[in-house]
Image (cartoon, rainbow over all chains, first blue to last red; front, top):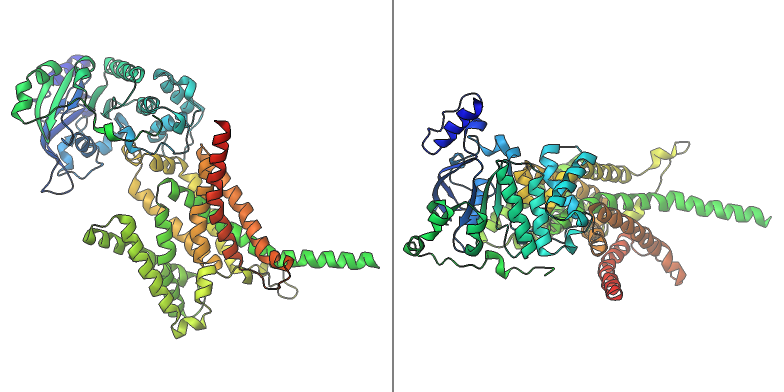
Length: 280
Length: 310
């Protein structure tokens, strides 16, 4: 009964008025809904202008666009990490982010972090549990076991005690994925999870994301590689400062004229190609 | 006969150690725990400049506190320093926005100006009367911290005020670090991710700033600005090349820092005797020198070990 209601409501999520929720709004609303969302430090140069889209529950969407298109800024803006024009333009499960933080996980670009930080792979994964643990609670045996499980899922069970400084670039990326996994979020936002990774890592992350999606998790990932986007993702958002197209990945990207019409030089080189990888 | 003189010589040495050396050592070690603990977080957050900035910019506040009250007063001192510290950080923000300089440069401009103004204030008549002088500002007054036990009084009443202040600051720094260990670590490694999991970076930043200011002001008077700055940065940097876990980083920085503090004090107090001169060296200056020298030595040792293992 409940499921039937959910299905019916979700089916019409795109057109449904925003405040149709009754007793349990977070179950009925789309995991992420943007309406005229703009982000940036000043009104004159906004990297994200009037973005509007709805992510359905269990969808797996690639955010595709050229370098400097504002994809990372959009993710950060959605998460409140960068100034936005109107914070209420982004709704998570029908609520502002503060009310549903536990349901949302974020995976930042690996190259933005300091990998000489004194910590083991397991320590970093356990950081994904801090929100649920709350203040003044230590990471206990149960939490460590959970972190270990997540590391095993990304094929790093053997490396749990390794200092993160000694891991390869791909292994570091998998540690970050494991950290997002332990958050048991219903919506996962990833910034370039496949940038500069080896083949094993790429396959592992793709598999983990597919499994999450099968469990009903909603996924939105900034992605660069047009060669792999079709095999990994079901949907795509073509983005360059504005949302240009949103829909099934083939339909959205097949129409090359769309890209040309908007002057996009979509390339296959990741944003982070110039980043000096410490351990590569 | 010779046995009794031996015994009295021994008890004299012990007396000297307990009355003159121990309070100084305790004060220096407490300053190390207070500044070194918080310095670890600052270094991990790549903000060692902030500690440096606070340590410099509190000076006019400290002198101002003395001038207003006219005598040593912990409350006036902390209030003045807090006002100066906050003013410096607000001003640095303003300079950064006006000039579009990077934040380190803006801080650098503001804290040198504050420090210079503080030194100028020292020359004012009132400040001279309250036994503050440029030497004391730079190197503190560690050597003046000895037990002054009133006749018939308990030894505890003779412990200098600075030792108590520093012990309190050290306790505060350790309690803060233990209580917010998870959050401080998460924020230091990945600020944005920590934010998305519900850690409030701004609240914790401000708390960190307060606790760091307390540690710096408490240490400033006893050990001087030079040692405060080196206690904030050096212990963590000494441990950095040898530690791959957070707890190890804290343990090694405080452990090696303590050893160097004791060694530095010993060298300042007793080494000149060995060379036949009677003038003792400045303890804070000696400790700061050792800590600073230990940083490149520590990195060299790491490089050597790596080469041997390769």
